[in-house]
Length: 243
Image (cartoon, rainbow, N blue to C red):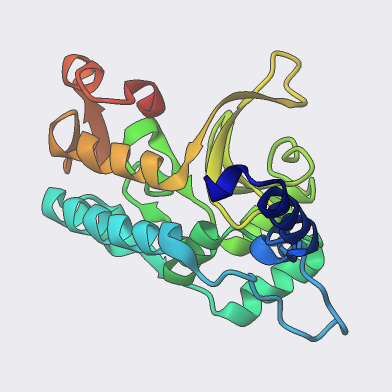
């Protein structure tokens, strides 16, 4: 057979040695991933997220619409006491002040809701809450004040910006990231610092709140307050996020 001929074997080996290596061009050069740290050329230049607004911001807006509808259906104070959101210029200024990016979902929230107006009744003045957990949405100004240690209460740990607050706790987002996760910070026993409890995507928290408003958390119009059905609450997924 010709394949066993010494001459043919010599030609095959020579061809293999002189053929160009295919692996040299098979794998394209991969550029390094873009950094999430904003690059600024001047103090007045607006900061933009390198990958746009993102799906998490869209989901936050969708869930905010659901919450608005359920607050309105219940006749809760918060339905009519939400303050209009801030513009991108205010959020960009916050990022320059903090030196870090505000996550996309938090930006989307503050563009629609900049805190709440207080409710004054015959017996008291209070800030409307979202219902589950008794959380009050913070204005962007109040959030920066708390993050800077200017009160009320202890300052948030470095790199965290509160979005919601209650007497002894904060729900804060971590700055410097494009993804939006919210962390529960509870006042420690010393009364001067916060301790971390859990961390979940903001959209998971808002979705859990929206589900709770269907049955587990009900509005009492006469007392301008919420009442919780503990059995219905425990039956919900992520019930620990409602405490």
